Length: 392
Image (tube, rainbow, N blue to C red):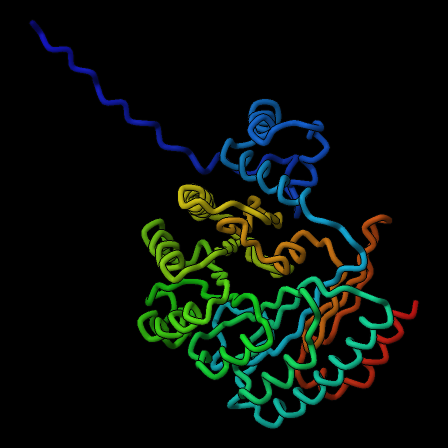
C-alpha cells in the first residue's frame, strides 16, 4: 500500500509594505473614528470582524482598535478629576534621541538649586488652585528623574503633594538613581508605580543612545523596585536601528522577568509629542510594521491587554503607540494622558496645563517654557499666567 504523503503547507509571508492603517483610520485616535460604527451591544469579536470585513482594516489592527476602544469607553469622564504632572528635568547624561529638555545636574548645580525653589513655588500655587476649584487629583506623575534629587528633597516634594486615593507615579530614566533610602521614601508617601523609560535593554543600542550602562549593571535596581512592591511599567522603543524581532523579543522577555505589570511600546516613527521622525524608506516602513505586529502578538500571548492606543500620521504611514497591562493593572495617568480625557495641571519647565470640558468637548491650554533658565528667571510671570488662566 502506497503511503500518502501530505505536502507541508508553508504560510505565505505577510507583505508588510501593503499593510498601513487604512486612510479612514489614520490620525491620532483611530478608535474615535471607529466608534461611529459601533452598534450598542456589539461584542468585541463582532466589532473586530466588522472592521476587518467591511472597513478593510488589517485583522490584527482591527482587533487592537476594537480592544482599545472598549478600554476607552470604560473610562469615567469626570471634569472634576484631574491629572498632576511635576517635572524634574535632570539626568546623568543626555541620550542622543532625547527630544525632551533634560539637563545634567552635575553640570548645572546652580541652576538646579534655583529650579527647585521655583518649582516648589509653582507646586504651592497649584495646591491652592486644586483646593479652590475642588478638584479631585486622580493621578500624579513625577516626570523626568525625581530620584536624581537628594533624599531630603524628594521627601519635601512628596510631602507637598499628598492627595487621598491618588495613583502616584514616578518616572525613572536612569536606574542608577535607585537607592533603598529613596525607594523607602516613595513607599512612605504611597507611590503606586515606577515608570521606567528603558527604551531597550540591548547593550549595543544603549551605547548608541549614549546610555552609559549595561543591563547587568542596573539589574539590582530593578530587584530593589520589586522588593518594595511597586507596580512597574517599562517603556520600550520599537524600531531602533539594528533592532529586529530577536532584540525586541529579548526586551519583552526581560521586562516580564523584571515583574512589569505594564509594557508600553512607542514607535520610533510615532514619538510622543509633535516631533515626528519621518521616513520614506519602504524597507524601514515594512520592518516597522512587522515589529509592531510582533509586539502585539507577543503581548497577547503573554496575557497582556491593550489599554491605550494613539497614532501620529507621518508622511509614509501611521504607526501606533500602545500600552499593555497585565491583569487590568492599568496606569491611570498614562491612560488618561494619552486618551486626553482629564484636565491636567503641570508644574515645572516643559509642562502643559490643560482644562478639559468633556460635556462641551472643549480644551484650552497654556504651556510652561521649555528652557530651564527661562523657567527660573520667568517664574513670577509663569505663576501669574497660571493664576489668571484659572480665573477665566
